[in-house]
Amino acid sequence: MYRVIVMLMEPYTFLVVSLLAINAGTWWRQRPRTWLLRLATVVLGVLYVCSMSAFSYFVMWSLEAGYPPRVDHPTHDDIVVVLSAGLILERDDGSRVHLDDVGLTRCLSAFDLYQEAGSCRLLLSGGKVDESIPGPTLAETMRDFFLTLGVKPDDLLLEDRSKSTYENAVFSTEMLSQTPHQRVWLVTSASHMDRAVRCFRKQGLDVTAAPCAHETLVCDLGVCHFLPSSIGLAQLTRATHEWQGRIWYRLRGRI
Image 1 (tube, one colour):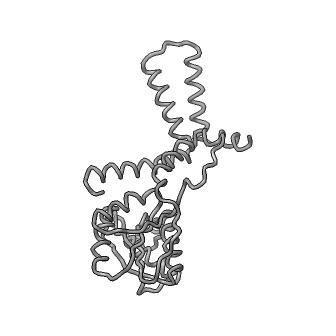
Image 2 (cartoon, rainbow, N blue to C red):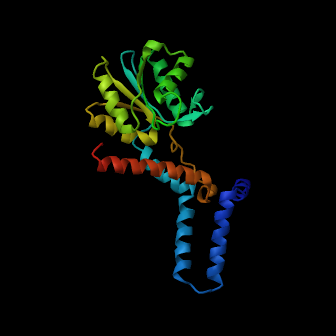
Image 3 (cartoon, helix red, strand yellow):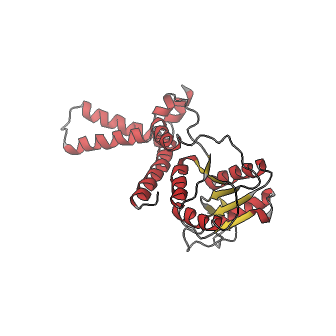
């Protein structure tokens, strides 16, 4: 009950529930039920459902279901491809940057593979999505992070031209065609893995998925998950973005 009360006091949850109560009161008082009121009711209902963690969990699960945590391990002769995510500027001139949370999680997952293999090559894929933003490429930033973890410089390969998942696959495949290897592992977020794997296979490269950052491994739904929250809406936004990417890539013949 405490969690429910605390959640109801969160600004976003409080506003949505208040709007729902006001809307219900308007209907209860039997004021003119115009088309505008009906439309407002529908929109409010959709907003409520889309803000429930229970709903966003299901949508995210639809993306991650095919890629559970890996159980196999790489060998020294394998190559691990790490797809970039984003950067956070600490200075306006780009002289100081760091990986965002998603990119950091992917790199740490790849480092686990690196250690399990007793060292192997890591191909870091990511250019500059927006050329107007100062600073290094995503691949260069990932390289600097791996060096701080103790990865040997000779084990790091940089693909720093790509600006999308599709280009990650195209340019990485070009590099891998000139690099001897046994098996190629692909590291990215579990929700992003299906689109990434399909892009690489479209280029003729079979990869072994090594998903990370799962959000739906544990299903423990309670009352709080059926209340609107900014967390639920944020998760749905991420899942919707990925579904849009899948559909767009399918229409463009990229997967």
